[in-house]
Image 1 (spheres, one colour):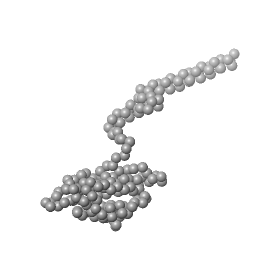
Image 2 (spheres, rainbow, N blue to C red):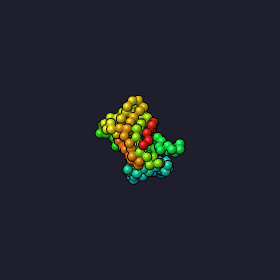
Image 3 (cartoon, rainbow, N blue to C red):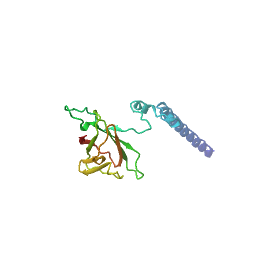
Image 4 (tube, rainbow, N blue to C red):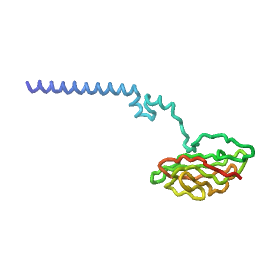
Length: 182
């Protein structure tokens, strides 16, 4: 008779523990569902506590656009001056990385001369510019520290665009240091 009594006591204890664990599980599940954490595993929307922060994020198009590194400055022309270095616009943006994983960047150089002039002898401030991807030296090459030559010094016609890609861990800040007007 003792043996039967202890078995029923053990069974009751197991049932009480099981019921307690089930109650705790259901309570935590209800709490997390209220926060929409469990629901987020069932659908693709983020949890409600993260959704409020997503309102401030920008939706970017699938196509990668080039961004302007420096703010556009209006050229201050002296009477009779055909062009200034601000007539050269530099757009730079990230592109797909190399197969080795090194990030690549596309640089676009545009002649936006207001007087319709051709510009040659375009030099950039470029620091210790280097690339893991070979760039045609007739398009862009570093001559020395902080001096890079664009288009082999040849004229970039009015409205003309020149572009190249380079690969490096970080983008180089490029800016126009000097130009010669035709």
